[in-house]
Length: 320
Length: 290
Image 1 (cartoon, rainbow over the protein chains, first blue to last red):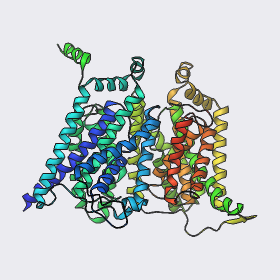
Image 2 (cartoon, rainbow over the protein chains, first blue to last red; image 1 turned 45 degrees about the horizontal axis):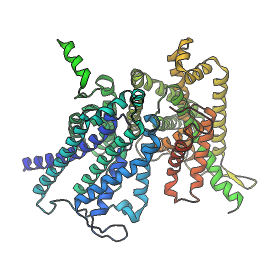
Image 3 (cartoon, each protein chain N blue to C red; image 1 turned 30 degrees about the vertical axis):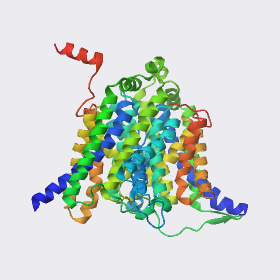
Image 4 (cartoon, one colour; image 1 turned 180 degrees about the vertical axis):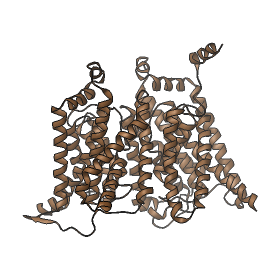
């Protein structure tokens, strides 16, 4: 009995790690590739979740919906919707330093939260959207969890391979050049704003996909399903701890941070009620402190960005 | 709607809210111009200031206005401490890394407030305050204090920046850091001074928000966007611009209720921010663009 519970929990955690790894991969395109600071991850996540929910859920009184499209259409729709939100923001803010994007992305997440809460005919406001179909959701509980984990893993693997391919392609090299020396890249004739916009949109689309996976996993989505600041921050610490600029690092970071986060939640839930509430905020404090420590003592993360080209050969020759 | 109603229900609350934003926006604009990054923990520092004043009010039985200077000094100290411990070693790295660190600080400061004071709404004084009637204008005493204190604080700051040696050093750092360093200005002292001023003003904005509404652990975070919008609207680096920007954002938020559902009040600041970045990123008073 105990073992089955544990296995169930591991499945549950695996799915969440997969979803967060997708978010971290998306952020890696923005931050690791292009040096863009997106502080509104939860906003793009929510857009993806609600778009897919509206496209695939059965008809319900009082809100838009009833399209009952297959789940993969919903997921593609989620990516497109998140990208469409990212486009105008990037268009306006990417001409300036990344600080402006940071502020604007906080604003986007806030506006999205407001829209979700108040536009009942779109999102059913506080009650949220329920009965979202889940692929292989008709199977018994454990099999269905396993099937979903497999789907998440496949989606993650495909995303990883595609992002990794782009990293090593000329496009990735150009992005790193822009990130590391914008002036030089501009002097080489690269269209800096346009490339940044590309990175911002691709990253946001992946975040939207992560949101869609989350909504279908839960079979419902409500405005309170995720705490925007916590979710955004968790993804940041995942990427920074794992190693920004390294896709495997992003996935490793997601696994490590989510494991710490959810195991510590179980531990603190054992405490009496009045301490358990405080413990939640202490955990938040510690996760903030963890970021500061990583930034100070290991800014390159667990798996540093792989050295490429000339740097790599220099490195080898200096070791000899 | 009569002109008096318009003044009573929209303009006066807007000016009060705008004064609160202005106090924060001045700090943001100074940090943006002198230290050259967007400080995302500014709102939560204001929350901390408001709750420190709350501790003084409940602990020593002082009035909120008497607690204000104490809260300002304490918050200025916290701001300098945060800079020493968490930001200083990042100074040689790209500025955006400090922006990220400040997002983490925002979370940390807020969770300290939530652990110490809980998440329920508090208020400095209980009971309902009736507005006084000035020729048909209904103004509460605390609303007058808020605007007067804001003007006094910013006026004092302007005088300091214009006349004193260290004020001039701060402006020099803002205009051209390399030249300022070459002419022998002590960078470290300027940084500390910037944090003292920004932290103190931040606490004042939190305390006045607490006096005029109530104290909540998220109050500061929700002020962050309007404060940044005010700073950018006025022009980064321009103190008088930040005041003007803060006031405009505050009034615009109150007026937005006339055309938008009230849930979207907070969206006004965001709209102003994007609009300014689109048409005039230097702001109304020609600040800098980083």
